[in-house]
Length: 225
Image 1 (cartoon, rainbow, N blue to C red):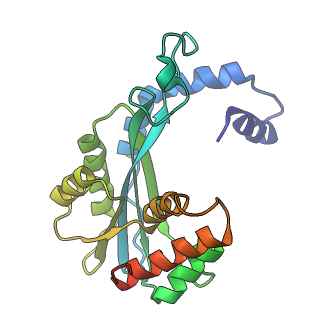
Image 2 (image 1 turned 135 degrees about the vertical axis):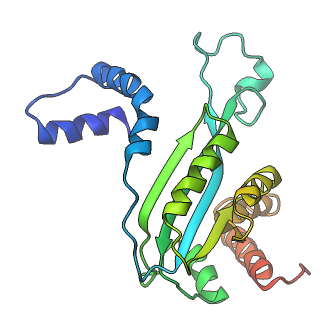
């Protein structure tokens, strides 16, 4: 959340308005205590009804702002955040347990097309999320391994949901070789959306139909054409 939102939350508990600059200093001061905080947290209580343990790993591009306000950045890179040097990749992990939930391909396509989640979908429990811009990916995934072990009782199925980056799949597989691996459908939709714009106008019915049809092909493992 933003510092402004944090300021409002603190003001709702205490009769004082903490300045934004003070909040920034507090965040900087407590950074050194974060690792120890998570090390000291007790293991979550088990959920007998939750048969699935889920682990996710994702890479997020963080825009790097130069201390001099961006001066010295080559003009060719100034307007394109995808160019090298404009972003640094953070590794984001998450794990939780949930109940088994069956959906058909039509259910998935309907959810993706209408941008509505299924009301009957069970909620995630004992969720832990973590992200690091400074730690190596392997160190962050090692943290995920410990959190997963705490949430993986005997009999639970482990499912790893990842994007399409091969290096991430290789790294996660080294830690969870017995897991069932799933390609994150949202990352697939991002690429399908970009492909649709090559043929149709943005937000047009034709572009949405393009994405829907090819999503169905992928889920049914059918070749295009």
